[in-house]
Amino acid sequence: MPSEDALLEALNSTPVVDGVPRDLWLEDPALRQWAARHGGDGGPAEREWLRKTRDVLQTVVRGEDGPEVLAPFIAGARKVPRVSGDGLEWILEVEAERRLAVGLILAWARIQEDSPGRLRPCANSDCHLFLVDHSRANTARWCSMKTCGNRLKARRHHERQRRAGRETAPGGTGARADQPS
View (cartoon, one colour):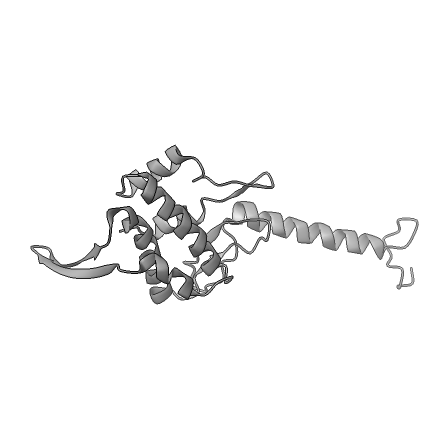
């Protein structure tokens, strides 16, 4: 069953690189490799389910669609309890080519239930990545403070400097135009 990390990898497989949106799952070998790392076979049907599921999950997390759009992706899937020497475990019963895709939706649902509001898109409108906020205050806004956070803070700083420059009196004295020097 895919984990939170696998869900984030899936959601974040459409980054913006140098201002250009990319799809890391566009090429079959890359997605086949991802599927194999997470217990799938990477066959054509599985890859198609994974791409479609990822795209719909992205719209749900961004708030563009409600969770009901996920219903066709989980139709017919069920979790069945099985008792073993290790205790009780839940087995996902669904066609093999849909198992990873349904697992991504179940990972999303676990986060929604256990940590509501913590899975969100990056606050940088130029970024297409997502994050799960594990901070105590639930105030994380960026996929990465190092990249998006710093970029936005620098952008706001430059904008304040530019506005302050327009308010400076001619002659470069630094006095504001509306203030006596």
